[in-house]
Each structure stands twice: as structure tokens, then as C-alpha cells.
Figure 1 (spheres, helix red, strand yellow):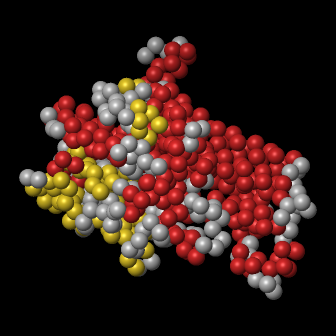
Figure 2 (cartoon, rainbow, N blue to C red):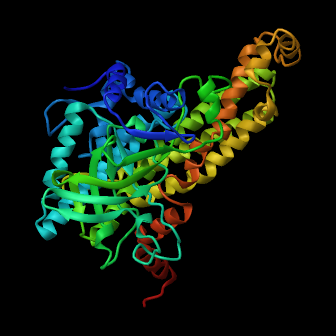
Figure 3 (cartoon, rainbow, N blue to C red):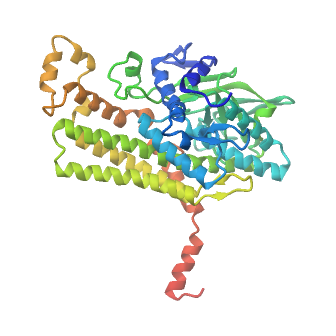
Amino acid sequence: MGLMTKNQYIESLRKLKPTAYMFGERVENVVDNPRLRAGIEATGATYAMAEDPEWRDLIVTQSKLINEPINRFNNPPISVEDLVARVKINRAMGQRVGTCFQRCTGQDSMCALAVTTFDCDKKYGTPYNKRFTEFLKHMQKNDFVANASVTDAKGDRNFGPMEQPDKDVYLHIVEKRDDGIVVRGAKCHQTGSLSSHELIVLPTRAMRKGEEEFAVAFAIPSDTKGVIHVVGRSSMDTRELDGCDCGNQRYSKYAPTVIYDNVFVPRERVFLCGEWEFAADLVVYFSAFHRQSHGGCKAGKIDCMIGAAMTMMQYNGTEKVSHHKEKVIDMIHRAETLYGCSIAASYEGKQMPSGNYYIDPVLANASKIHEGKEMAEATRLMIDIAGGFVADLPSDRDFENPEIGPLLKKYLKGATQIPVEDRVKMFRFIEKLAMESADTISDIHGGGSPAAHRLTIFRESNTKDKIKAAKRLAGIES
């Protein structure tokens, strides 16, 4: 089939018949639901940019598997150039949509599987890498989108998977058959699962001996029987349903909880089945790749924040205020810190036994730690510059009301030469950037908790060499 256009992508989703619920009701038409369509449009931008001559050379590459042009989102990296391109594309996408474009997790899961299935096969003689390679060809030939299903419900955090009162809080194998397996469980925070053709399931944590049933990885179509997508609430979701006060006029994010209710997985789609020691590898590789991804896309989002803040300086008549300029500088260096760490993680990447390339995990996690702090600070600075109407601007419908609209336009006008309508639109966009819970929470918890990022940095850092250096310089021989 080859590369799809954005319109072809939208039409390809119409062929799927997922089981989806939102606000307690079944969603029969996912593609045309306004709340979900905004997220689908964000993913669609990855196709639109691949069509754009300005971006095509960056986003499109030649596949070594199918010998055809493919979108890099379906390309586990096989060079440092591929690693660097991931970050550059993600920043460009963040700038284009101003929110999550919902396609990096699928790529990150494919990166992890490319490495881990090879290692597992080498140890046990399993057929997982061959199966994964066939799946990857399927993704590339059809230019499909994959969602990474990683985060389990986890239940009582005092207990591991086997000790839980209800084992289903960790997705696990409930039946093994000659033709495949049956699984049950749920995956939470599944950004863009209904924008995806395929769901790639990975373990959520390292497993121990005796927890083999939880050490499972596979891929299935997003409309597979028994898969139920329950769209989560977020702070501004009903605005998208009625098309009013949206802020971002085209794009948004949604994140369902995806329930796997006795779902059958064909044997050829199973990439890990009980090899418990490789669950940790999948988690580590996926997390590191995903944290590298964030350094690109979140830098792109801060770019949008900077643009919005500077526009409001013009619209408010404060563009010459020196302390506002200082705040913009602070926002810029925060964006470049995230981006720089992820770019460095890419250039420090190394080739793995599978032939794929893996980023430097310390630098990738450093980027993510900065993200959790710097995104919050960039948001604060943007709001500081913009002003209080980010919190309580009257509705668009109030401005359209023939009785009160003219009064609002009179009193809420800013700089003389700027139409009040433009000022209102920018306030609303800043509100979306700052207060959309589905997106802003991922600045902290996306790719794992801040504590996980810190632990990874300590584990992966060569502290022994640092100690040796200090002792050598101090003249200590032991």
C-alpha cells in the first residue's frame, strides 16, 4: 500500500469497529465524534507532514525491510541518524499541533521489541524476533499507527502481581492454546488508542520467577473482540463536544483505559510469553526511548507557549516590558534544555546485538527529569505574562450574545490595533496549553514517575569511575 495521506489515514480508521465508551455511553462513530476527532487530527498531522515537501526528507525514510519509503514512526532506529531524526520530528510535531500527537509510544514500543525479542531468541531459541519483524513489515506496508499499552492498573501497590487480591489488575495470560493465548487485564492512560490501528502490549514492570503469566508482549488490532476503550475525562473535554471555547482550534488529546476482557491473541502476534527475565528489558528500553521522545515533543510544546506568551505581550501592549522579556528567555532556555538532552542521548547512542540503535539512557532520563520541572515553570511564566483572563474569560457565546457581546468587546479590548476577537482566541489557547489535564499531567508522569527517572539515572551512571577519579586526584590509592 505504501505511505498514506492524511485523508487516507482518516478513512482507514472508519474501517475499524472498536468497542468504545465515553460518558457512560457507547460511541458508535469514533472518527466523527468531536471529542475524539481532535485527537485523531493530531495523529493525522504525522501523515500531513510526511506529505509536506518541507518536512518529507526528515519524516520519510527508506525501509530496509520492505525496500519502500516509510514514515519514520514505523522505523526502529538502525543508526545514530535515525535516533536524532526521532527527536527533530517530535519537536516539529509538537510545534505543529501544540499537544500530544499520539504516535511516539507505538514507535517506542517497536524500538524496545526490536532489541528484546532478538536477545530472548538468542537465549531460548524462541521465534519472537521473526514474528516481530513480520509485524513490523505489516506496519510499514500499511503505514499504520500503533499504540503502546504498557501501564497496568496495578491495584494495591503494597503487593506484586501474584499477591494481588485480584490478579487481573496486572494484564496476564489466562489460557495457552496451540493457536495463541488468551489474556485478561487493563491498561491505563492509553493515549490515542482509538487513533491507532494496532495495540502493542508490553509488561508494566520487571517480573520475578513465578510471575511468568504476567511476562507477555503482543500486538493486536485496536478493534479486536474483547478490547474495550473507555475514554477518560479531562479538564476541557466537553468544550470539544460542543465546539465552544476549545482554545486549540484543531487538535487535542484523549487517553482511554483499555480493558482486555479475555482477548485472544494469535500465536504469530505473541512476542513474549513467560520469559519473565525479559520483562524488565522491555520496560527499560521502552521507558528510555519514550523519555527521549518527550525531549523533542515537549520542547515543541514550549515553543508554542513562547509564541503564545509573546503574542499576548503584543495584544496586551506589554511587549516593551523588560521583565516579560526575561521570562521569555527563561522559557527558551528550558525548551532547549529538554531538546539538548534528547539530542545528546541520540548522538551518544550505540548499536545493540540486534543491529538496532539504543539511546544513552542517562541523558534520556535527564531530559525527562527536566521536563517535569521545566514544563511547569514554562506554564507559570506563560500565565504570568498573559494575565488573569487565562482563568475566567467569558465564553465565546457571551461575546456572540447581542445584548452583552458589544459590552464585552468594549471592555476586554487590549492593544488599540488588535481586534478583541484575536485577544480572546489567544487567551483561550493559553488556557488550553496550561490547563488541559490530559496533556499537562503527562509532563510529569509520561514515561514513568519522576522517581523512576531518577532511579534509572543512578542505576545507569558509572559511579565507580567517578569515585576512582576523585580518589586519584586526592592522592588516595585504595
